[in-house]
Amino acid sequence: MTPLILLPGMMCDGRLFGPQIAALGQTREVRVAPISGHIATAALAAEVLAAAPPRFALAGLSMGGIVAMEVLAQAPERIERLALLDTNPRAELPEVQARRAPQIAAVEAGGLRQVMTEQMIPNYLADPASHPEIIDLCMDMALDLGPQVFARQSLALRDRPDRQEVLAGVRMPTLILCGRADRLCPVERHELMHGLVPGSTLEIIESAGHLPTLEQPEHTTAALVRWLEA
Image (tube, rainbow, N blue to C red; front, side):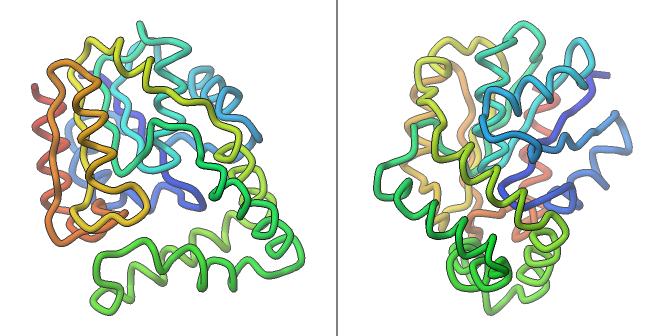
């Protein structure tokens, strides 16, 4: 059975996919590839490929999806199927780029917890009041990764290329999935990707924001199972 590689979002690790790993790992090899060691998506993708098996299924959420598209650009022949969750195929907008340097400076000055609390985590969930445990987990993941990873990942996101043309060339089973209430990567962005990838499947997860893997784990896992078995 084809191994599955999961790519987590910014300042997240394998715990982002905890429910999916528990379910899918019963029948196939599931790996989580770190995307934290470089300041460019091309280098992050090359590192994923260097450690990956010859052929694999690839799923990425948010920044993980952006790196997945870079993996696709570098070695499409090695990817058996692709899942892009709560992500964005476009280059970063100038107004978002402008926020990166102040955030990095604040984090490097000791403000990682504050930046995560005030600027990052509030955008993650459809209903933050209902999921304090997810908020706590997001903070734990961010603090475990630390300020240097925040800086590297911020630069990689800031300088990433547009990958819409790459998606238009995809000819493999592809799942496009997002939470209905995702404010960071809204539904229309996923409808765009769905239109770019011939034959792709679009799944909108109700009562979820940017992290459906944790907010609605059963529905998200079921969608991934359908994709893997297609």
